Amino acid sequence: MIYKKMWLSMIVVDFHVHVAKFDMWTPWVHEYMKKVNPLVYESFNKIMTPNGVIELMDKEGVDSAVVLAEMAPLTTGVVKNEFIAEFCSKSERLIPFASINPVTDLHPQKTLAKLVTDLGMKGLKLLPPYQHFYPNDPKFYALYAKAQELKIPVVFHTGSSVFKNARLKFGNPLYLDDLAVDFPDLTIVQAHGGRAFWYDIAFFLAKRHRNVHIDISGLPPKNLLKYFPDLEEIGDKVIFGSDWPSVPSVKVNVEAIQRLPLKTETKRKILGENALKLLKT
Image 1: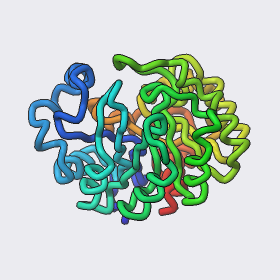
Image 2: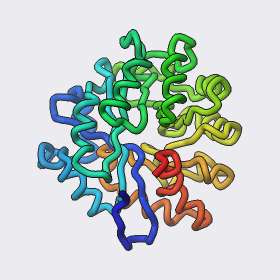
Image 3: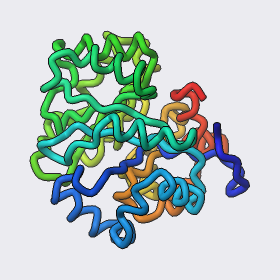
């Protein structure tokens, strides 16, 4: 169910939101978050609740949000799938995405099936730079085959990271080209659009493959046309995400997109319609 509002008369789906209990994130993640969004830390335990996030969404003009689990103990921490499933069960506006570490999980395809069937997860988030793997390694193909069978989107962290122990070589979106070819019905989302190093690769993959998309989380919206000068060409493939709480205001980012010299139809797609198609809502 989509929360109805009048603000901007457009549906806004934030496709990239992080929540956690305090002890789930590593110390360096907290250090970073305190710098970029100190207001969260004035009442962390209150804001990081379903009611707290819904209240924030109302304030920021967000209809629905994809909330991400995170299995990355070496880098950012462990936000368990069970926690995210329970968190999102409090409101239909919160959409749970699972996380699996395919490096340490001996049967990730079985884990994924269980997470979708038992916990109601609507997608999967993988973090190659944090979990230290090349996405096109054939030993992970069974996982992608299962995601394709389950018809859920798979979000891959692409591009840079500021966090300790991240290995950026694994974030090159070019490795996703093999997956797009080998799994043509798998919905692939390039989180952060190849941030910093590989914008051109991320753009080309989205343009080339019908099943490849870009989420613009972690990118200053005012610079989108700098990073992707021909963004209008892939207007059906671009998905809004904030990466909250690593941004202080989701609404400011939405308004920045509104000001871009793009067609109104394209803005409408980016802010919500493209995400709804992927989520089959």
